[in-house]
Amino acid sequence: MSFICANSTVEIGEKPVIMGILNVTPDSFHDSGKYFNLSDSVSRAYEIQAQGADILDIGAQSTRPGHTKISAEEELERLTPVLERLGDIKIPISVDTYYPLVARECLRMGADIINDVSGTVNEEMIKTVASFSAGYVVMHTGFDGKDISKDMKSKDMRAVDESTPICGQVDGFFRKIVGECERLGLSREHICADVGIGFGKSFLQNKELLTYKPAEDLADLPLLIGVSHKRVVRQMFGDDTLAGTLKCNALAYGAGFNIFRVHDVKEHMDWIKSL
Image (cartoon, rainbow, N blue to C red; front, side, top):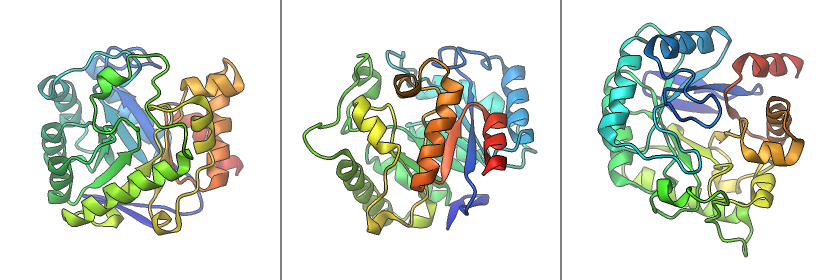
């Protein structure tokens, strides 16, 4: 299986693919602005590569519960200086955004993947990604096109219907968005599916999705999970969220997940060596 991403291709094989997280925000839920300074963020990007990550994922807007939404222009002000200094990085660059304007400018600057956490079918975004033949990570949230910066202000954050099986809901969303992508010129080889752990779901739904298996007609898509240090980890395994993250990712890997979005690249590379 291959995930085709503009300037590169991510090969999906037997070993987990590691997507290293770089938050260039002052309010990220885990590293709390540790890499908001430009020199720190650039250094961390190269460290993520040196530690063995397969993909670098850069985000300039927090999506933590209660986060303050910023504009596309401010998001670009944070991203542009970082991208300008990563011209010789070897691994594919993913940019975490739901703004088509930001996606277009970052792809123009050499990014390979757009990681869209909106949970919506956005035609402008899909057309933008397709015009660069980039990779597109699509996330299930259950917010049905609402403003996630408002919907996630509640600590509970439940948006998904709890009366029907969560895996079927996720299948339905992926089926819908893949159909729209193909209609708008973005083929399946460019699409990666993220089940959206922690976005709009109850604890039991999050727990169930750790071992999600897609429907047969979706089984050719790379499957991404981003559980790193999230609340569900503490709920399942206690306060040691690094150990808990590794346990959650091991469960997901056993279920068939391919790509693991993580803060702790070195520790996950050690995990891979043990497989």
